[in-house]
Image (cartoon, rainbow, N blue to C red; front, side, top):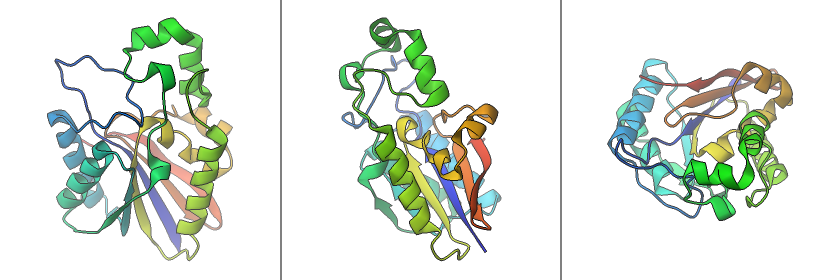
Length: 207
């Protein structure tokens, strides 16, 4: 028996003519057209790969709720989903809604690299990595308590998703093989079997 966690990052919230900014938990943007297509692609991928979730969780933000709703409909089922605050995006503090050039000007390129390579939050960002990791570990423990072949889909954001692989107990080993950042509309798959969580795929981009 096993338990499968599918971690999905929501679809695009900026269109081709928009200027992307660093969007955190205090900015509730809807999906744009390409984001809707990404959500549909997630649903098709789940159906084609027999990864239909038994239960779905999202954050409170509409970009994750929309992604989940569209993906589930596209997969051919109507399973309910639940909103959990723990999956809300992080708070980027003074960098919320700033273009990346302005963010880099404030904190420097090395701080961005440390965030992308090590999940080390820059100064000024209101994020508690230890708490996020604890949230993932407790959630993973609950979801696999019965080891009943359950599959759960979690639709969240970039700043939260990158901490999920900590449940494997070997985050350093994970990041040596994978970039920890999930692209918009991409998936990570973690499986619990024999008392151990392992990563079966990361940054999978459904077509």
